[in-house]
Length: 310
Ligand SMILES: NC(=O)c1ccc[n+]([C@@H]2O[C@H](COP(=O)([O-])OP(=O)(O)OC[C@H]3O[C@@H](n4cnc5c(N)ncnc54)[C@H](OP(=O)(O)O)[C@@H]3O)[C@@H](O)[C@H]2O)c1
Image (tube, rainbow, N blue to C red; front, side, top):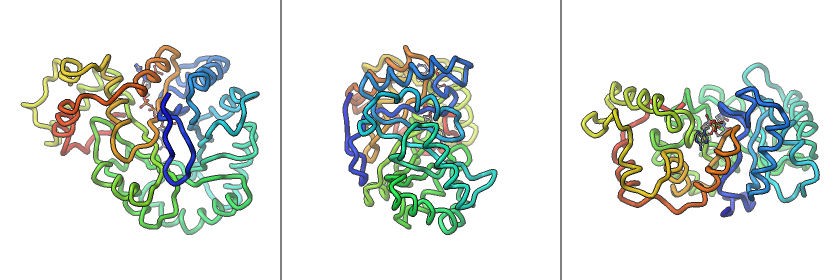
């Protein structure tokens, strides 16, 4: 496992972060036993993954907490998130963090994120809720403050475009993948200028792990006029990636594509499957895809913004 400095947090983090949400929720999404999810987290830790992303909304904090039992707390970077959509107030933030800490069996989180912020809500949250995050940081319960976007609804990163100039976020969770590379021009310049730590979500999701979903996504882009139909073969979608590189699968290529994007620190990988976990650890330890393949992918999807890979 390779490690990088996580932007201005200065934390040393593994290039792969274990995402405990997404469709898999470390196995809870497919009804696995909690013990299997706990074992999956432990496997990741044993393989050198030291960055774990969860959220109060995922229902996986307690499993992360159980997996961390007996592990040196200072060797692990825990990121969790506060939801706001149902109800939010300074008191609920305090209460939510205390509950997350109890489930995670710790007395601080390394990164506390506002979860899935939409552009329409950003100003209100900054003015009414962020001060409480600062207080909790002063009290030592949070080390760094992060924000995650609502990528499926905000496919071109409006919330981040609006919020980054405030320069209050240490960490940003950003949607980016082969099919939607808009973050490159929309936000990575700004995050790099401020040395904001960037964690990538949606590197693979469903469109890059399931062939029928990939065809569907490519068709959506063609219908939106964002992908040239003469440049893709829907009977062998993105087949050139495997033919012209050492990628072992499209999933392998997708993680590597994200890992080597300038401005990216951590690529989150979400899975409930131990074999996938092992494969993804290997993918994120491999070198970049050959430059001609990367350039071809950049060119092909240069206008694509209508899908997220969901
Ligand atoms: N707004 C937000 O704050 C927000 C939104 C979305 C996600 N997130 C965070 O980002 C993390 C990453 O997103 P994600 O969970 O969607 O992760 P991802 O790694 O992009 O994709 C996960 C999907 O790919 C499949 N997969 C993973 N490895 C595979 C492999 N080697 N072969 C075949 N299929 C594979 C998984 O199924 P299997 O279980 O079968 O492997 C799952 O369906 C989340 O877990 C969460 O922590 C945050």
